Picture 1 (cartoon, rainbow, N blue to C red):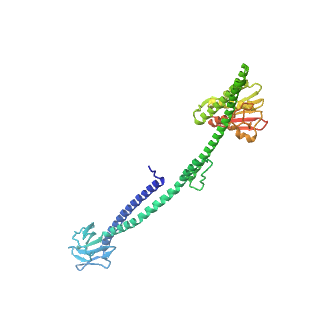
Picture 2 (cartoon, rainbow, N blue to C red):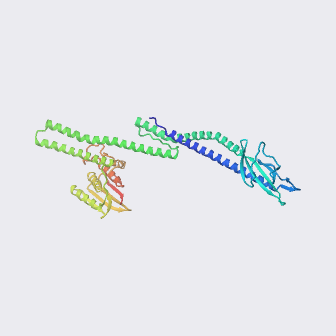
Picture 3 (cartoon, one colour):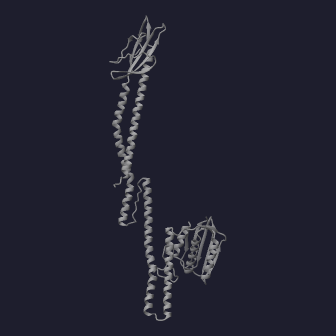
Length: 448
């Protein structure tokens, strides 16, 4: 089934609307002009007869017209009759005859030879008791002629108006649809060429088209960023999983060929176990990332005591990390609406990161400031170069350029998860660090 274009639909309805409006305007003009002309003609015949009343004279037993009497004015013919209905002066329109009764002050119509006429009579009484009549007659076809003229003019003008309206509507619609056509064309070109770096950049278009282009460009930018991150993520994940997999395979092959004693097998199994745990940690964190991004891992917000959570996590890590001094500056009874599991995981990741790459002293702080809750973890370890600080939030990024398993056993996922948890809570992460001067990771969010 062939699709009908929006341009055709809009132009069609716009044209139909203009035709309807033009017809209604023409009907209104014809009706109004006809009524106006009829009323004007009726007014003229009445006024003409009434104005002539004062110029009808009676002297010496004779009725006659005075000097101001007008037998014809503005299409009105005036005739004087005596009291016995005998014509004294004046003429009717050529070919007009009537036997209509005389009726004082009543406007009516009469038909003669296919023509329609207005008739108006006025009765005059003189001082001596004698009487006379003035009859006014005018053609009604004058109004018909004017209405016909208006109709002819409208019939000649209306098609031109409709054509111009249709052309104008198509031009405007075509211009309005061009940005959409360009969006469709660019979409096809991007789809065929797989080039997400292209942008519309429609700065000289209308406001609506500009807003559409801006939204589309932002969408392309997000898609490009997502695809780039996905490529990087896939590459890094492949690397992180390939290394322990290779170690496990090589150890199994070595054990099959060379291990002879139970001690040899136990050593090999120990290596395989460590690599399997590393793979399990990577897979587990990748699943957590995927669940949070896809929304399958729901955020269960509840009102919780952040001070108690921070105290518990610090105590647990003090027991696990002997030789590291913990300092706590936790303001008591700070409560907020959070996902307790995620906030606990975030703090554990920050402290674990400090223990792996920090020095011998770690400080954990929690306080309120300007309606916000602030949490920080500070260490005195190796620090982070300024140029690398934006990269630490990327998945699998590690300070070790070789991206192999380092002495600390990091897989480069901890801080990326910390940042995502912070964003899910409407907060933000920041870092202050310098090489060999330690690092401070801070989380800030509104107290809800």
